[in-house]
Length: 163
Image (spheres, rainbow, N blue to C red):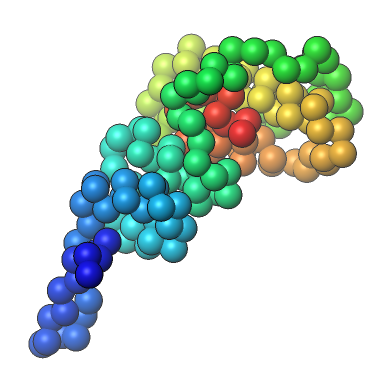
């Protein structure tokens, strides 16, 4: 029986060394194998391939299999007629965005000031759209950091980050 993992047990140390390769990750994604994806993420992290990483995180975060290429073009259609600031939390979202740690994260600290400003504006838009479309949700301070992470994992694609 083929195994997703190639396991080598060292008799001298009784240590299990697990060797992963990208096809194993793709097999886990294909089968929506949460446990194995979690193990791969903890052990070695995901590949440098943004598509593979996004697909992996979408399964781990409970979003199912996200169409990372938006082949149905759902992202190009504005589904809500409400403006993005038609929610009771837009003021606190704006304040939180101004003090967001996104600009200082390891991954984003080297981005240009222009890129950081643009990204934070997009994250603010994402937050406002979600809290406008789902008025039953409640915003809490620092939720902007959670959404910033979704934005970063989605490689700046608001449609996918929102899903």
